[in-house]
Amino acid sequence: MNFRILFPLLAVSLLAAAPGPLLGLEVSRELPITADQAESAIKAAEAVRKRAAAAGNEWLQTGSLLEEAREAVSNEQWQRALERAQHATRQSELAIEQAERESTAWRERVVR
Amino acid sequence: MASKIKVKVKLNGDVAEVKSLMMHPMETGSRKDPDTGATIPAHHITQLTFTNNNEPVMIVNCSTAVSRDPYFSFNFAGAKAGDTFAVSWVDNKGESDSTEVVLT
Amino acid sequence: MLNTLKLWSLALWLMWPAYAVGGPEEDRIAFQAYFQARFPEVPLSDYVNGIYALDENARQQWEQIEEFPPYEFAVEEGQLLFDRPFGNGRTYGDCFDNQGIGVRQDYPRFDPVLGEVVTLELAINQCRQLNGEPPYDYESNELVSLSAYMAWTSRGKKINVVIPEDPRALAAYESGKQFYYSKRGQLNFACSDCHVTSAGLYVRADHLSASLGHPSHFPVYRSKLGRMISLHSRFYGCIRDVRARPFEEQSIEYRNLEYFLTYMSNGLIINGPGARK
Picture 1 (cartoon, each protein chain N blue to C red):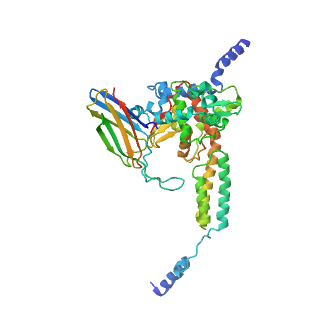
Picture 2: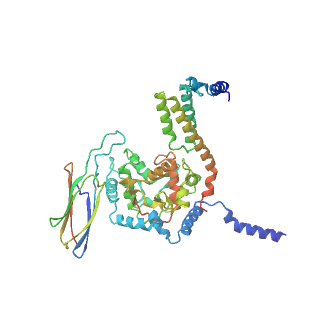
Picture 3: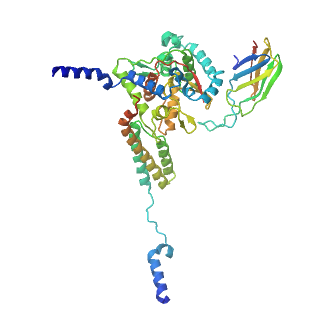
């Protein structure tokens, strides 16, 4: 066991594996959400919500999710706004799928 | 104004079965108006008295635990046809209501 | 050869009703037959009592409440409102058949001029507007009390919703029927999922009633709320409860739904207003 070679070798491999934490640097691998991203997510969510409503099938929570997104924007909480808007979008997408499916599936349940 | 108390009394021998329904908001004073957020002031019956021939047979000291438009039912002994049975209440705002029936 | 053909044609012609697309009458007969088969010990006439036709324990509690019904105040208030003339001297009686007494069982009805289903509540407000009075909010005590009084005067009369020979009326019925059987909301329930398929079963702690007979006893005094509510208020609540965005009272969706539902209960008697938990 030649420690004079082993220890430096260990140190170098550790540094190579995770230079950031060891050197006292933490670099985030994701870019922060911008105001533009949040606002366009809200616009998109509102557009899909309108389509769900036009299909007569808007879900209960969608409106309040969008309200929370807008409130987050006014508080400059872009991440939160984006998450709320995306959640609202997903609800509306599912609602539209449901309405399309039900436009024919309802007949199966009619009592005969 | 006509009484907002309804009362029915059924005689079984000398035992009277009383059922009464009265209109009253019975606000506890803890509820908030959903639109304005303002607290709705307490407005509830404080004392309810049932008498037979002017003798009290039941006195109820009400408070916030009784809900809107209270319904009370109880039995009492010593009643007979021809008796005058009366119900009256007074509330925390000083308002009151009463009604009476003749037992048959 | 020709005889065989004639025989087959005759056979097909005789079988035709079985293959024909059923109309409202066929729907109603099937609907009522379904529940009678499902709950053989419940007489058809008892369905107007909702869950109390299916739950003995709840029925006993309800019968006690009915000895001194909580909706009596609303009926009395409704009568006072009904008898009071409008500013122009006319009354509600002038807007309805038979002076408005004992007419609930004929609603909802299809209005050929409006081209839409008119419920009793809508008709009350139409009457007000016709006579220069502001319409009542559909959730207001005044409107529900008027509806309660008019239901009271119809007690014992058979529900008689008519679908006239008008394609718009049939379309309204079909629209209500589709609404009833369509899954909606985040919880993905159709009205029929609870009130047909699961009638008599439980959703959490609530014992589910059958849809048959539902419209007979509205408006209803709800102990939970300490006040009267209309049928559309109940629609609103149910749809909110399956986490769909509800429509408004007296929206075209609810009126068509009421049209379909009440037709399904044709022949059963009006026993409103009712008392429920």
